[in-house]
Image (cartoon, rainbow, N blue to C red):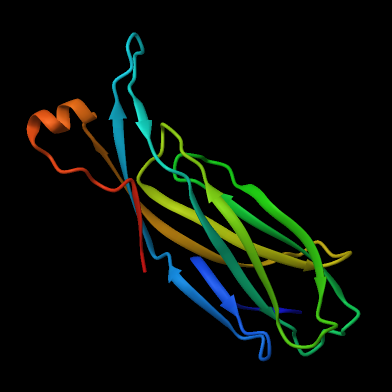
Length: 171
């Protein structure tokens, strides 16, 4: 059975054409989100501003000693936000190790804004199973999220507060 090598999330990466080795840039270890309240007339709750964040989910698998090049695998990448109780499948595919060596998934992912974004953990998993079997094996990656709500633009200006970036990844 295949074995997990590693999984991570990063802002970008580069694959060497000759060696097929990969470099990951700006690996996301923590996400600080600063939401700004926008005053909206006649609404019970103010609108919160959060720019979408696009990054790569990378998961690498190695063939096991009993794997044949003709063995095929089903793969899924799952995701869960801090404010949700269920996991979502964000990528599905099949693969094999016919080319020799490891198999790497690089999936572009966009974290979309929501008014109810909470402090907690962004959770990702890549799970695989041999086609025709029921047992999944998986590897996981978690990103701690810290959410701070700042006052609306008018109130911030009135109180002399500095403008804070909307999101920042910490390598």
